[in-house]
Length: 259
Image (cartoon, rainbow, N blue to C red; front, top):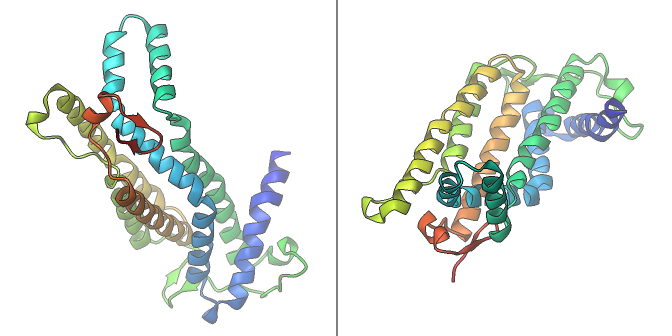
């Protein structure tokens, strides 16, 4: 059942979109086709990604208050959980929202991997096409005259890792000044923990990218850059407030609501 839904709902539409774009893109460049697909996916996910980015920022801003609750109810896990849930409810923050775009990205990545495998291999093109999509016969996997999108590419893997680092860094809270007091120290600890995690995903992206098709690392690079740009736009619209202001009683709904 799941396999049939995946095939009909993700794989086949992406495959046919891939081939249809390949037929009309000047020069039949696979890299440009993947670029267009990435932009389309990011546009579709834009509202959900915006909610996720706001939720991530809200969780960072609430981190000092979360640590206070953990210390206050260190010996009573049930009360601790209830207090944390109440805090999320009060500030209108849903932690699950911050993870949804990443969870959705994985099925898309798997579908794109299969599309590149079948499309660039040219063996299964006809049997997966809708009647309205013309069969190009074969698909040239080389982009820009030198990058084979069907094989691993170290340069694109490194670029994807750098993009991942940039995107993660744009969400990291800066350390507060010493005069910020106890709340500032809590905020600084949250910033330090975030910085420690900053390097994990970029390194994993590079390592995994070395073994994946260049088309996938190209997609991941483009998708990450577009998400980072979206973060920058949202941050300019609503600047991140200091955690001490949150602790004072401001309400967060994916953004700071100043009193």
